[in-house]
Amino acid sequence: MSRKLNKNLRKNNKIIEKDLFASNADIEFENSDFENTSYFNSYDDITGAITIGSYEYDKKGRVDSYSLRITLDDSSLFHGFEMKNSKSFKKHASHLSYILNYDTTYSSLLSDAVANGDCQTLTNYLDQLNGIGKGVTSTASSINGGIMCFA
Image 1 (cartoon, rainbow, N blue to C red):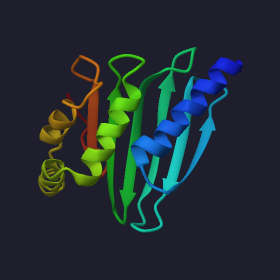
Image 2 (image 1 turned 120 degrees about the horizontal axis):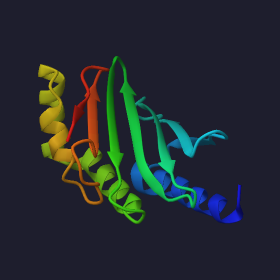
Image 3 (image 1 turned 90 degrees about the vertical axis):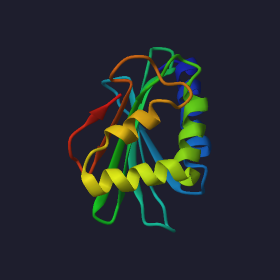
């Protein structure tokens, strides 16, 4: 692995730590030797939430897409995103962190999705975040391992 690639992967990991999680959660990272993917997982001591995820990157270490699954008690939530360009990751991660933690519209849509099992409205909402790529599969969501919704 080149020094430049290693530097960019460390930068991406810092974005996951500081921008996406924005907490003191202990996050572990592991790079795949066979594919351009970095995996991460964390455990939040306060809420008990377990988050696993990954990001895919190009040969220079720029993030193309990322996904995460948040599990709390018996419920799980999956979100996957394709980035608009190589500079979109940091902006998107920061925006997603805010949405997940503070946005009342997201909370309401998530409650509705869990209650009726349909995550399409939630996925459409997330597809409007900064930095999302174009196309009908740029954003994906699933509740409790159910049907995958795309926007």
